Every structure is written in C-alpha cells, then in structure tokens.
Image (cartoon, rainbow, N blue to C red; front, side, top):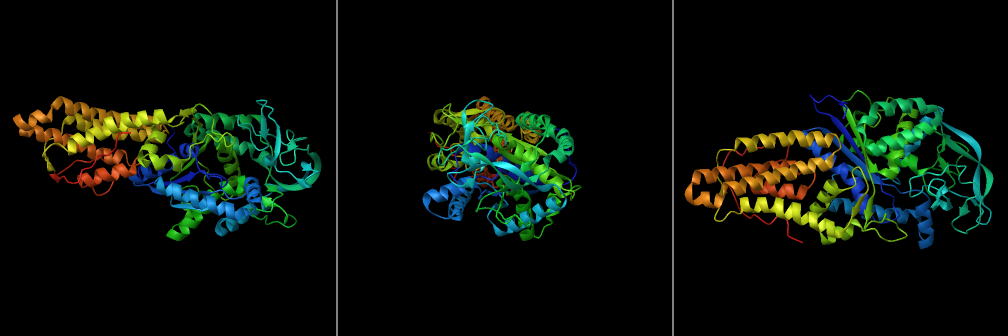
Length: 535
C-alpha cells in the first residue's frame, strides 16, 4: 500500500462505516461488511493516532415509506424502531463508534441542506426536464425501486434500483418497466428534477482514482474503473417523495433529496456533530494538509457510492475537502451456499448468533474468515469447527495451561527466551503491515501462529517436569509463556476486545498499546477463568 501520510507523528484518522438501511434487522452479511471499521478504529487507537469512527442509520427513501404504508404507521416510526435496534446490536458487538447517528437527525438534515446548496451555487447541481416512469393506475411518478424489469446484464427479474448481479439500471432501462404495486406497465411522462453533474467531474475523479486506488481492495478498483471507462452520467438527486430531506431550492418544495446523497454526506455531518460535542475542529478530519488518513468500510454493493459519488459531492463543494484514501470493501457472505435474500428468508441475524455464541468468537470469525476478497459461504458447522480449533484448542488451551498451572499462585520473574522475544517483536511489525494493507486474514494468521509457537514451546520445555527437577528453568518457561500472553492481549484487542480485557486483568496490565510488553515483576494469579467454552 502506498504511504499516504507521515508516520513520524500522530495521524488524524477518520473511519466511516456504511450506514445500514432502516427497514429490516441486521444479518451476518451486514456484520461482515461493517466489522472492518471497528477493527481499524481499535488498531489505530493502539498506535496512538487521533481517531474518529462515525456512522449511522439510513432512515429515508422508498422502502421505508412502503413498509410504513403496509404497517399503517409513520415512516419515522419505522426508522426509529430499527435505529434503536441497530444501536443495541452494535453495542452488544462492542463497536466503538464515536458517534452512531441517523439521517433523520435535525443536525444532519440542516448541514446536508447547506452542503447541497453549495453544490447548486457552484453549478454542479442543475435542473433538467426529463421523461420519467409514471404509473397511470397509481397516478404517481415511480422511483426506481418501485419498478420491476429484466436486468440487461444477467437476464433475471430485478427491481429498478439495483440487480443482485450488481448492475444498476439506467434511465433508458426503466422505460416501460412494470409498477411493482399494481403490476401495470409504466409510461414516460415529463418531470423536472435536479441532477448532479458527474460528467463535469469525470477528469478530476479519474485523477483521484489513479492516485488512491493502490489503497483499495481489488473489487473497489475493478468496479470503479468500469464506471469511469463507460463515462460518468449525470444523476438525479431529487425524488418525488414525502419522506426525506427537503430541497433548499425554490421550486423544488415538493421533492426530497435522494437517499444516496444524504447518507454518504452523513460521514461529514457526523464528524461535525461529534467534534462540536468534543470541542475539536472537524476540519482536522476532512480538510487537506492535516496528516489525515480516511477509511470507508462497506459491502461491495456500495462501492461506487463511496469511490465515485462521495468524492464527487466533496469536489462539487470546492472547499479543499480531503477525499477518502482507503476503500475497505468486502464481498458477499452467503448462507449455506445461497446469497442472503429477504424473499428467501435465509439470512441469519446478528442477534440470533450472539444469543447462542460469544461476541468475541463472532468478531474473530468475521475478521479471520469473512469475505475479504471473495464471496464466502457461512455455515454454522464451519463456524463451530473454527471456534473449537482456533479459540478453544489453541488459544484457550495455551492461556489455561500457563496461567492455571497446578499450584501456581503467581507468574515468576524469569529470563525471557530470546527467540520467542524476537518472534513477538516481528509479529507486531508483520501484523501492522498486514492491517494497513487491508489483509486482515493474514494478520489473524500471524496471531494464531504466535499462539501455536507458544503451545509448541510449552510442550518442548515440559514445565510439569521442570517444576520437579529444575525450578529456575520452570520459572523461565512460565515467564516466557506469560509474556506471549501479555502481548497477545495487545494483538487481539482490535479483534476480540472482551478477551483482551480478560488477559489484561489476569496479568495486571493497565492499558493496551501497540508496543511490546515485557513483564518486569512477579504477578499474583487469581480468578483465572476458561477463555472459551467448547461448543
């Protein structure tokens, strides 16, 4: 990965987690896409960087109004219900957001309207009359999501907003599409909307992508280059809806803002809000020349909204915004070899998993075996197998046999094995490199290798014999193993924070950091529990 910042001083790091949509419960696919944000937040805090981690609930748009109509309630009731559920889930999963907000928040709405007006005044948002699908039976203009058509790319029936294959239908594709509500064919009728002049920003966006794409996962590179090669087309930024953010421009009082605009600008408004609360300058995290690194963490179905739309909106304001550096896009998590589908009802919710299994084990699985660079199939059987192998047999066993050694009341002070000491030092370096290159699975493998090294060292040294025959060598063995565990408490903090906290309590370590720990004194041992119960 290209070095975009000065490593010799603290960095300002902004991490944006994709905004989940408030019309259904969060499933494991959402977790696979979002866990990267918390992983990176905790890692950069260990380094001592100035970190902000923001996200929120996407509350506007057609699906929520459709659901509200079915349930006979206000769209805000639906949004608030799921926002509360999402916040509860993220707290249970130990996500360390500095602010998790919502797009129906008044602060967000006001600041997005201000940014929208700036783009309009800079002539990057303009009005245009165009033909739009209109349902004569329902007597209304139809949003893309309210339409159904045959996907030109894969040939399957799809909604008009996006196909499961990833294709986003164009305005031309929607001509003659079917109204999903009444099943009648739509007609074309003239309507006036505001458009974002993406075509005017083509060259600037190409330059941006060329500069930054070496810091993106391959899916982000490929998907973005495809759109740029086709040539960017101007996109409507207003919709005929009653639920959404108002348009601050005369003549468009009957329209609302397209959700993809206000959701991605939420990264800016959330930063502004939390910085106001903390007494910080939000521009330190969004303007150039601040030794800033910006991550965007999302699923592959949201790639272009982060690699093209968000940078375009920032450029259109012409206010020296820093454009996102690193795109952390994940692939799809399939369930039992099937793509997660609401209609099939085959998604496993996050809440269902953490009611049965530990939070840390779920976090570990999603980071070490999630869909990092390719689609991954999730099964409970595979999850249990990895849990028992990595966490119970290797990690838990090593900690247990060291700290619960028969009749051991304290960690003795001894001489650290030099080879083990060098390996620990190397692990910090390797794991850091892997994390900053978005190779999280390899980072996890390095940790498991250190645990395996500890188990092998323990077996070869045979402390159960040393205890009887050579107490000095026994002390050295236990001391060395305890140092491995102490450093594991640092290395696993971004992945399994609850487990890391337990290890720190066992070994009387005050705070985690990304610096090698060297135990300096004897440590009393008490209340050592089992880290992971076998499933």
